[in-house]
Structures are given as C-alpha cells and as structure tokens.
Image (tube, rainbow, N blue to C red; front, top):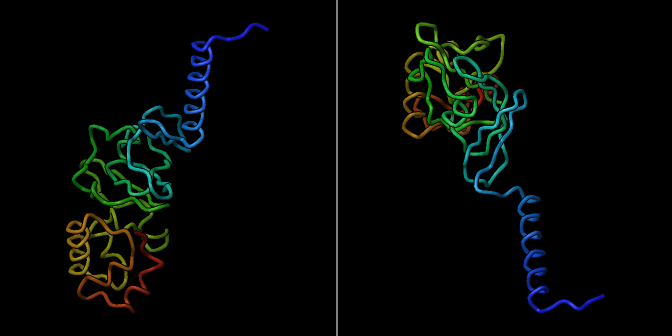
Length: 190
C-alpha cells in the first residue's frame, strides 16, 4: 500500500472532522432553523424559535390555510401557531384573538371568520375547558364564578402581561380568590 503524503492525510483528516461535525449536528437536531412537523399534514414550512424547553402540541383550526395539530417549541405564541398552519385566510378575524398569548400544551387555537361569532367551538360547559389564552369575555362569562366584570379583568390582565401561562395567575386578579380558582380549574386551561 502506498504511503500518503502529508497533504493527503490533512485532507482526509479535514473531511473526517467535517463529517463528524455534520453528523453530530444532525443527531442533536441543530441547524439554523428548527422545523416542527404537523401531526396531521405534511408541511415544509419552518419556524425559528429559541429552543429551551419541551414542545407543546396545539390544535389550530378555523380560518387558517392548513388546520391541524402541530408541535411547537415551548414559549411559542398564538401568532406562531397561526403562521405554522399556513397563515390566516382572507376572511379571518385576527383582532378577535390574542396573537401574543403563549401557547399551552393541548390548547386549541381557533381563528374565527369575520361576521361569525368568535366563540370557540366546544366552549360550552359540557364540552371541555376554555383556553384563557384565547377566550373572549363572552366565553369567560359562561363559566360559573366568572361574571362580565371579572371576564373583562381577566382579558385586561392577559393583554397587559402578554398572556397567561398558568391558571394560578388568576389569583392576581381582584375578585378571583383561591376558592373561585379551584372551582374554575376543570373549566379552564392556560
């Protein structure tokens, strides 16, 4: 077997190091942007959000291009979920939802259409929890223990603080005490 020159050894070494670096990045999942795939659609769009936490899975529905269930990085906002679902349709009423609210695992993001009731489907008392991050005052008012004034106070607090990441934050709102919070836990989600 012929001997390799120093230049050939250096080139082979550089190639090996480059391949190891590329392989390590692939294994760790790094690379300029992180792409999160939908559970229900094959979408090649990507979203760039700082990593550092567990992912959340959200259901994006209503007036969006590609409704579906999407895995999003922790710390993502409702706006990120709408963009991940292909963006809003021309008939979307984006001013009816808080695009700056943080997403919670298992949350449903509903983008209503103009001229329709902005109520979240399934938000009545028999269907399941209401999302504090996207609920309207009318939706919150349907819950026993929350009246119209408290509903408006919750929305004002949510808008002032960039969303609600926990139901426990409700104790910072006047008129919502520990007993009310415990009664609301089954009806609300962050």
